[in-house]
Image (cartoon, rainbow, N blue to C red; front, side, top):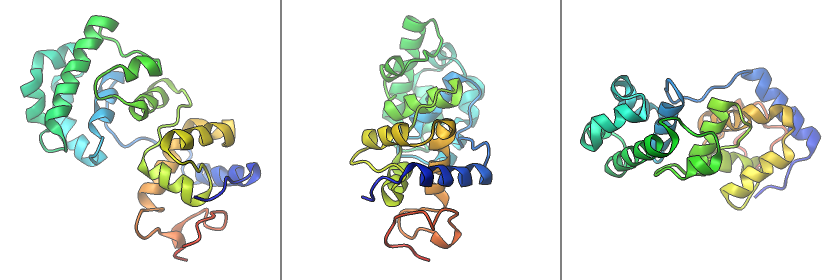
Amino acid sequence: MAKQLDYQTLREIFTRFKNSEPEPKGELNHTNAYTLVVAVALSAQATDAGVNKATKKLFQIADTPEKMLALGEEGVTEHIKTIGLYRQKAKNVIKAARILVDDYGGEVPCSRAALESLPGVGRKTANVVLNMWWGHPAQAVDTHIFRVGNRSGICPGKDVVATERAIEDHIPVDFQHHAHHWLILHGRYICVARKPKCKACIINDLCQFEEKTV
């Protein structure tokens, strides 16, 4: 684990990220807060591309909790059976839809605790929804961010919660809204797990990773 980078270095890193991609976007297709919750929950142990393929027709049919309940568990299963853990995910989608209808009037709640109370929705999913839909600077730490944060020193932590806290505590607040998107994209396409593309990295001179491929 690299040591935490200082303020000025972090400011330079995120200035470069912003200049390269001023408005980074999540790659999961969705039309409203509800379909975003479902898409992010389905993305666990699956690729965004795979989830988008599976949900293309599903969201045309069921883009509200009420419509999802009408479709039923078997109907959901048929749409998502190309992604990992699809049977359990279908159960969770239906259970969550029932809770949203019964307890929240069919609306997606905008608190982390309420979101985490939904089956299949963990802290990461809740933070993605809070950030992408409501603009809250919540940090959704996945394997990409955890890897990049610890390799580089941007946001090191012994677990994802510690890495999330490192982002909140150390990254300048004016970069916090998009921080997790920049870090996810960097980890997905540049700072990859096996052979990081250090030659193509715009922050390689500031990164503390000792095994650079440059």
